[in-house]
Length: 96
Image 1 (cartoon, one colour):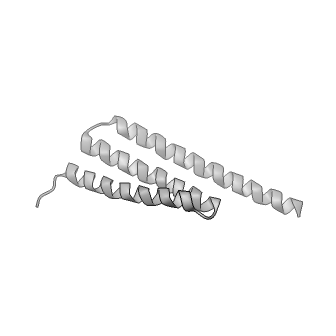
Image 2 (cartoon, rainbow, N blue to C red; image 1 turned 135 degrees about the horizontal axis):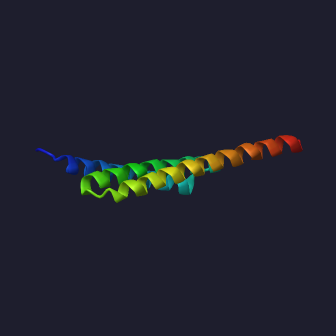
Image 3 (cartoon, rainbow, N blue to C red; image 1 turned 90 degrees about the vertical axis):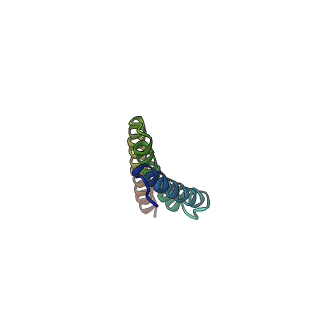
């Protein structure tokens, strides 16, 4: 059984899509906001990988631009969450 590189990329993208389902389940059921944020970051990085693999398999370079935008949004949301959590802890310490 010989696979072409495009077929292999599509198989890996399908595997990552199943991983996205697990991340979505964790984001919905996460007991803490930090768990939900980590699931959202996983969603962003896995989505980026899927889009890059689809761009490779389908020959569509526009998907790489979408993947880079998704990666940037995931990074910014992680930084915003960390900043909010950090400032929230500082405010709690000052109130005590």
